Image (cartoon, rainbow, N blue to C red):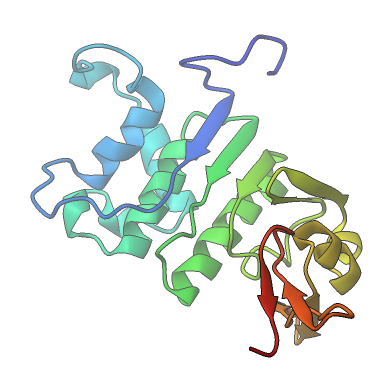
Length: 213
């Protein structure tokens, strides 16, 4: 990665994890959490005079979270905590952002906000983004390539190539209808067809269900 092996303490890689609510008693302030993106790999506590708070403030500003800097992170909402995690991931100015289900458990508005913040980072800094998610609609306006995985099978291509009824039916080995409306995509499973003997086969190809008892 960036000319050297990817490994621990590689600042060229930023990581945004799933949203997990932090306990309200967590003593860390939001800016302390962001700072861990710079020195979290070290043992002990950084000396106050050597902490680059300017970079921390800039990262919080980039995700519109400046007002949360001195707030105990456990008191922030789920969406606000996730903004702080994005700031933590970008504070070291990484070349690659790995996003591991960062929209999980967030409301729709927060999902859209986080997706937009990640894309803004990509546009303004040329950061590469690998985004793992089950929530496709919030990121659909921003992605250029999709790797769609189903039980070890996959398709790689543009959204227009991958998100089709034909392609997803092949992946799921079961009838799937892809419905597009107002920029959104709905993937709906359809009833499996019956064979000539009146038996409906499940998508794993192993279990059969008679249509008439």
